[in-house]
Length: 390
Image (cartoon, rainbow, N blue to C red):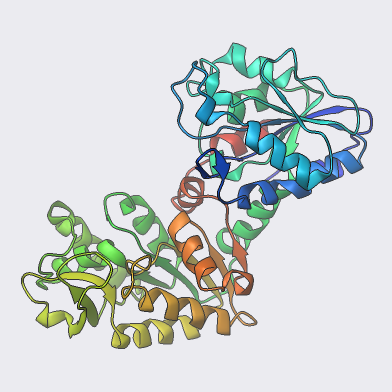
């Protein structure tokens, strides 16, 4: 993919407009997790080191477009950026206020306060681009959205390029999509087959083995004639799941399904959980995790993998006692970090490896959810297409 990188540009004396994803979780008006802010720092620091002034763009939450709402203001984000950068980072409430000199940083107020952001209004896109000399796209998590600040502004800019975070994402994906070391194994969890049907079909063309988990696995179990009790599954996707299983067999792809599962009456803390074979799921119980036999079978598949793509946990890991399956898989991957490249993406799977203290032992932790999936579905991300065009 031919895309300019910010690290290769001369930015001395220029104003750089950087689209970041600073959509941090907030609680009582305070930032509860600043991971996305920290992820943006290398790009912002490099721009400053190169002698540029920096205008930062981002969205926060889901305000009514075109209307200001205090709870969605980027004011706390600007303050945190200032602390991290050791600078006075001002919040510009209007385009006219978004002026910087070399060595200065300001944050333009939430782009979703601007009418036309989501519909990629060309006039708004041009206003974003006109804020500086170079437009830097660094928000991989929004690269699948054709919006004014993520796609339109790139096309309007005099010069556009990828920031360090976006470049790191593309480098990591190249190891999986372009010429992956094999065997290549994908682990796809989540609640619904319907949200990942295209992904599963696309992955079968690429991978050597495909492991499914969560509610997705329940639908596949139902497709093989298993009784899944009161578990979450999609009856209307059973036939589609049968077709995917048949496709895997035809292509010679390994697609192991759960052998045993952890069940309980409901998804809630403190449940009286039990482990049973998939042939003996009680009628009134829900499948909420995979059992030890399944973990052992999955670990055997993963042990031979040279590349692993992981999106979504295999059980309801957030609630005890339904996280053992996901934890064991994470630990197995961490143990073979020297022989396997593992890329983890999607909020829940990333949260899982972080909660178990395993993030540093994965090959790459992606910042994207929807963008992560769409790349693996074989789709062209609007922001990347716009950057290629420049």
